[in-house]
Structures are given as structure tokens and as C-alpha cells.
Length: 321
Image (cartoon, rainbow, N blue to C red; front, side, top):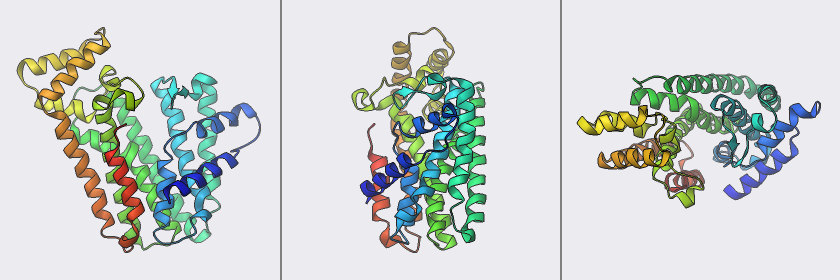
């Protein structure tokens, strides 16, 4: 089922032009939409819909709307982060220029609403209201993420809340959208949204963990990028909480030292993480959020049909890169 839905998503993406002229405005959209990605969000929409109906082909364009919104956020995030690569390819602002990337992102967001306008009138208002709430929270999460870069008092709870808004609510919306379009009971819509939010937090924590402890060959890039960038991940915040004495001094010095050799920095911080059992603590936190999400599936009216959704979630839990 997953492979079939992924094929439907790719076919729909290749069909969408997102606009015509000027080509320099719309080609960046087609570019970022076609350079790959897990297609996690539209897939969740189709899997959620399929719990209640068997004609998921009817809603593929709406699922692609979710993917277009996700890529819109990436296009603008890359500008804010001064990122040069996205999925191994040049970012839009690097390949074209910053002004084009801003405008292409703006019209990309408009195209999401264009795609959603095909939804039946009886469902459209709910979808748009739900989407708008989600989109605002994604922006709130991104703002907090940027503010955290210059703050030294970020708490673990604040990090989780930032992650919930920036990353997890879109996974929750993806699942809720499928349920709305399928006419699922409102309680099921809520449970599927909560499943997605909890899984989304676990998903981000797993990414944080993998950035430090994944097999470099499997990850396909140098590990420790978050350490080098002094990114306030859950791992770092937990280490700052647990470290004492010389260990805490050493960790803070690694963070403050701007000219430290990157490999030496990665090695020093990772060593402290291991001494404090941070990898094991964060793994338990990851399991907690994924399990909280899966528990929501046990409560929906169609729980006997959740096998594909569960298997896909478990593949995210167990992934090593």
C-alpha cells in the first residue's frame, strides 16, 4: 500500500506545474518539489484517509498540497539558515537568488490554497481553518527556533514545544486532513492529529539523535553537524542539565569556543554525552513519544485497519539514517 501511494504522489507532483510565467518564478517550485524527500506528510494523509475509504486516488492532489506547504517552509528556512544544500542539491536561493526564493515561496503557499479549493464545499471551511492554524504554528515554531540560537536559558520543555509547532503539527494536520476528507468521526480526527503530533516530536528527537550517533556511511554525511553549529538540541539541553563540575565547564567551553577544530569539538561533546548516558536517555524519550502516538491509534473507531499506518510509523522509529 505504501509503495502504491508513493507512486501516486510522485505522479501527481510531476503533473503539477504550479504556474506558467514568468518561468523564473515557477521553475524553482518545480525544482524543489522534484528533488526528492520522504513524502512523509502526503503519505500520512493517504494512509489516514484509507482507514475509512478505499478510493484514496481521489484525494492525491490535496495530499500534494500538504507536501507543497512543507517545501514552501523548507525554501524559506534555507534562506534564514543560509543553507547551500537541500537533499544533496543546491538550495533555491543558491541556485537562483534570495529574492526569487522569497517570491517563489510566497506563490508556492498560494498554490496550496489553489489545490485545496477542489475540496467539497461541506469540508472546505474546516480544512482551511485547520490548515491556517497549523501554518501559523509552524511559523511560531520557526521563530522560536531562531530565537533559541542566541539564548542561553532554553529549557527542554521549550525545545519540545518548539518542535511540536515547527515540525510535529504538520504531521498531525496531514493525518487530520485525511480523516476530514474521508468523513471520519470528529473524535477520530482528533486522535489521528494527536498521533501525528506525538510521532512528529519523536521523529525530530530521532533526527537529533542520529545527527550524533548514526553510522556516518548510512547517514550519508558527516555526523555531528548540530554540535558544530551549537544547535540547542534535546541532547545538548539534557547534557547541560546533567553535567557538573569540570564536565560542565568543558561542555560550556566547547559551546563558546568559536575557533575549535570541528572534529575535536564533535569528539569532545560526544564523549560528554556518552559519559552522561545522554544517548540512552534520549532514546527513552523518543520511545515515549512514539508510544504515546501509537496509543492514540488504539482508540480510533477503525483501529483494526491501522496496520499499514503502524508499520510505517515503526519504520520511522527503527530507522538508522
